[in-house]
Image (cartoon, rainbow, N blue to C red; front, side, top):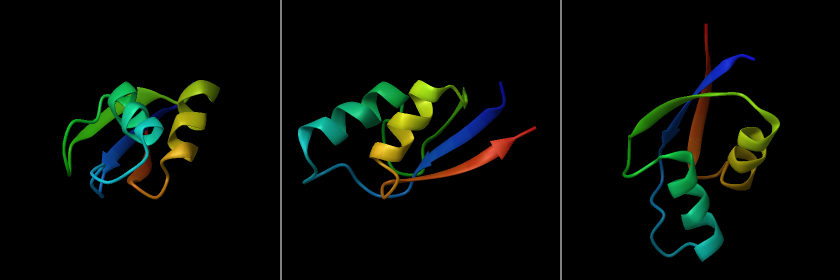
Length: 60
């Protein structure tokens, strides 16, 4: 599987609880915090749920 880098670019404040839990499950803690994870179908679904709060880029 390929790896992706996920960066939080918008705040989770005043978002639905489900979106806040998704950010936490992805390992994102604060604005401009980045994590590198494997691009599994589960992770991609989580990213899709909060795509308006994060930025993704592929990592070689």
